[in-house]
Length: 272
Image 1 (spheres, rainbow, N blue to C red):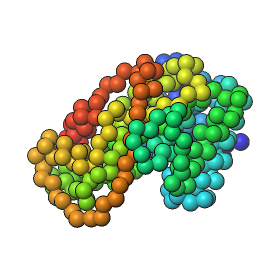
Image 2 (cartoon, rainbow, N blue to C red):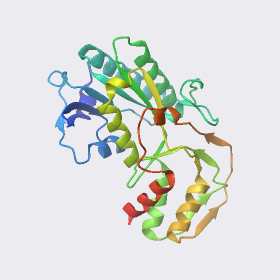
Image 3 (spheres, one colour):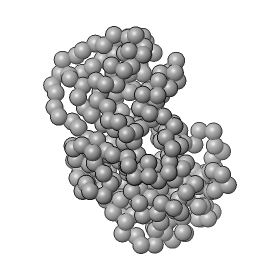
């Protein structure tokens, strides 16, 4: 059984005639996906006839054993519900499952947990894999950015500085390197997998732009586009590199709408 608290954060909607369930509806990704769609409260019995379940709901902080247990129990209940009712599952995993290395690919890199959140995502993936009655697609989502993002300090701080027309802060050497994904692109990617769920069962996809960016790259790009100065703030530096390849996503037939550069430009336009 799915918990009452979980069900309260889960809704149903339709996309191209498909009835779909979306968990984590109050979160940034889910609310962006649902923007413009008509949503209805989720009922575990009445909505057992849905076609696809997009599982975006998860506890992300604080990273504790209690958080891991809650995510484990929720993922187990969701996968059981989908398997029992023949509903295809799109499971939102994370780039956090990869250790600090470059060019991680879905098949060659063994996931490693650096915290309880990463461990919960690795475990959630395994729950999907081991349930033989379940049709699941796993999306390992890169660092997400977009207007009004609530989670993640980098782009929240960037938006605040741009709106105030203040210098953009660069802490340390800015060499944290990631593959990012723009929220508008991510929404389109999720829609693509919803509409083609039967084609991509039991597969894993890194969801990100092809080109990795450092924090310094991003700040420098936005400074050049806005004319805002960069305020360099001294701080300790450490190696923090986690990059992914998105070859499998490209091979799936999905056509990207943005590059990292055009996404940053659109992000600036949205901020105004």
